[in-house]
Length: 267
Ligand code: 2HA
Ligand code: ZN
Image (cartoon, rainbow, N blue to C red; front, side):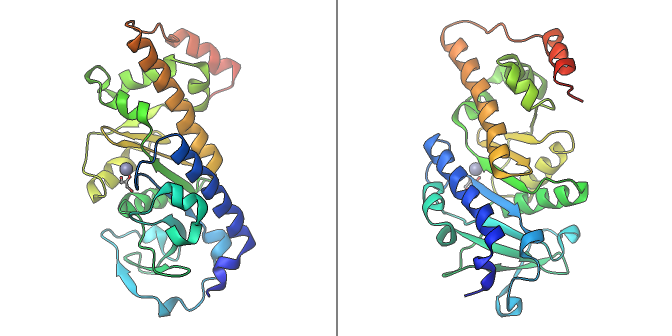
C-alpha cells in the first residue's frame, strides 16, 4: 500500500469529506452520483506519494501549468455521496498532476477510482485558487434543490436579480456571501466550456450557480464551504416558501444591506 494513505494529516481532511458527503446526502442534494468534491492536498501529501512512475500516465483535456506537481484528493466518477461518507478510499482517489501540467496519475488505495466527470472544472478552479495564492483549497459541487429551483425561474435568470432575491431573504446570507453568487449560462456538465465559464465567474465570486443543474463553491475548508452553500440554500427555501404562499417576499433592501456592511465590517 502507498503510505500516503496512512498520513494522519490526510486522515483529518478525509474525515471532514466523509462528514460533509453525509450532509449532502441527508440534505437530498446528492441523488445517485450527484456532486463531487476535491481538495488541494499538496502541502500535506508532498513527498509522500510513493512510486509515482508505477501508475499509468493520463492526458488532461486542458493544460494547467500552475498545477505542476500539485496533488489532489478527489471523489470518483459515478460514485455516490452516501458511499463516500462510509468508505472514503473505495470512492475517492489521489490525483497527481505531472511537471508538464498536461498529464496526471491516479493513485488509489485498492481498485483504481477514476476521478469525477467534472475533473476539467475541478482542476481549472484549483489552478485559479493556486494563482490567487490565498488559503482556498476546497471545491464542492452539489445539487441543492431550492437553489436549482430558483435557477429554473425565468424571473431570476439575471445574476443581479438572483442575488437580490438570495440576499433579501436573510441577513446571514449577505454576511456570509457578500459577493453574491455568479450565475453562468447553462452548459453541458463535465465539459471544458463549463470549466472556463466557472473560472471566469470566480473572478468576482466564491460560489457559482450552474442553472438547471447545481452550484459550486470554493473555500478554505470543507465545513466552511458546505456552510456557505447551506446558507444560500436557506435563502432559496425562504424565497420559494414566500412564492408558494402566493406573495412576493419583501426582502432586505439595499439600504438595509448597507447597514449590515458597516456593522459586520464587510469589505
Ligand atoms: O458527478 O454532479 O455534474 C455528477 C455530477 C456532474
Ligand atoms: Zn452536477
